[in-house]
Length: 628
Ligand code: ADP
Ligand code: MG
Image (tube, rainbow, N blue to C red; front, side, top):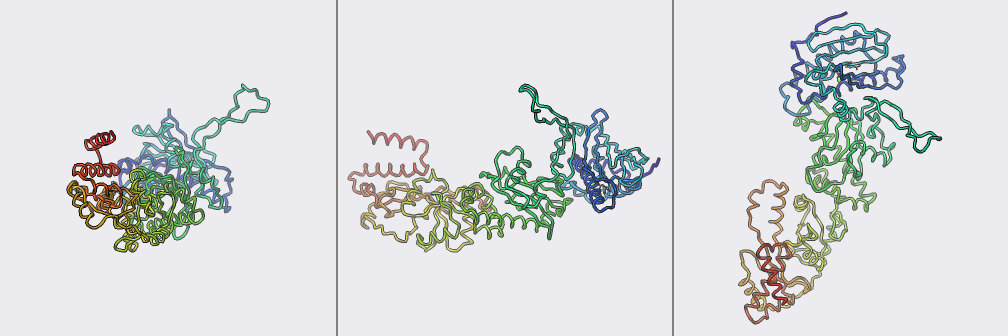
């Protein structure tokens, strides 16, 4: 029997490790299973090149709970270690690795959650165990070794009688960590960290139903058998080539990733590069709602099929964190803080690669099947619009496939929209004005009025679209957006407009004076317009600029404080060509004129949703009076 003291400078590093990585205790299991996987894959390699004479077979890794003995076993059939190797790799390599790790990250312990994900290795076992044993038999023809350590730098190393190749790690679970003796806890950990590791992992047994034999009676129960319960899929879809996979394989993998998700993804993007960095993965576009916040943190980050985290902030550009799926890259440094990560050159390249791939995929979907792309637009627009706002590179690419739907369900690209509108309408400053509605129901009468004049009206209803319009107005030349109920619409000039005013100049002056007498100038700016006689007689519009600033502030426009205190201001546009307006002017008594004006104004307010409370009640009463 050999006894010894591990040569470390810190008297006892285990209490330190324990305290330091308090919130990350659970990672010990992933570390030990990673080691077991490494040992198995190494053996696979050695046998394949003829360096090892043993039969590789179909090795698996077993995790076993011994509740009564308060022990947790992790057993592999990998290459094992000789006593000499235990001495070297465990006592020296692993220990110094742990010490180095501590030294390096002691001070930045609180920096970010990602620290502690990798690097501690074998010694993380001491976060949950007060004694650890290794019983290991090398694939080389040498006796098995049994190493025991209680967390102090003292250890024992003796010969063991284990005959099967491989390593068994036995954790004597500490009093404060008995949760790791619960089936449910271990099972949850395995499915969190090890679901896609490359070697089959067994945890307990399960009952499998077999087909009934031919001669079985109706009432006979189907036969069953006990089989190993394998918790992982060693060959997940992202590790395969895109050419090996059908559409259904991608959908099935989505279900594997998100078993509780019933909705199918809209499409996927297979990532696959090995230069200048290594990265594989599959991203999915799910159906999006208009809520920007609740859907993040669904992309899982792996390193060589080992789960690391589902917080990919800094690795994936912000606007793509709304997607789902998997990214696997050994090239992402993990023992660093988020702020460091974002400044890292390799990570920056990864991030822009992902952005480019997503843009390319969208472009090809648009080119190959525009109809389908249009049908999906509503579910994906939030990501695309967000990307256009936040990533200049993406904006440039997306300009070719970002869509602008009309209220009638037509879809234009920016260029198509531009050409269409240029042929049809300008404003007084010869600017191209793009009309849009944000709500088909609320702005119905305005939409109808604009359509009646032959204008194209877009339906732009996502929460960040006001930011996007602002961006388009500054990047594109000579265009502006105006909501159908905005004041801009009054300045619009239809190129083939031939409407002439029915009122003479004197009549207009008289009408203007009359309206200003009845209507408070603090609330409404009265404007006379000769419009189509079918357009409503009174219409209320709001300055586009002011309304949009308020909207942008509400969705995080930034820097525009004070806007919310601005008074509500409206224009009252009076259609001088409408019959009723002529009638108001020609009505004999003042009282009757006032009644007609107030009633019409209230109707205009009603259609903008501006008539409320007592005013609404009075309006309805008055309307009944008139009907009598
Ligand atoms: P790392 O895995 O990063 O090398 P660890 O501390 O996890 O660091 O492990 C240290 C070393 O111990 C490994 O490199 C390996 O040589 C050896 N080792 C650990 N677990 C096993 C195992 N199950 N089978 C064979 N060797 C192992
Ligand atoms: Mg390791």
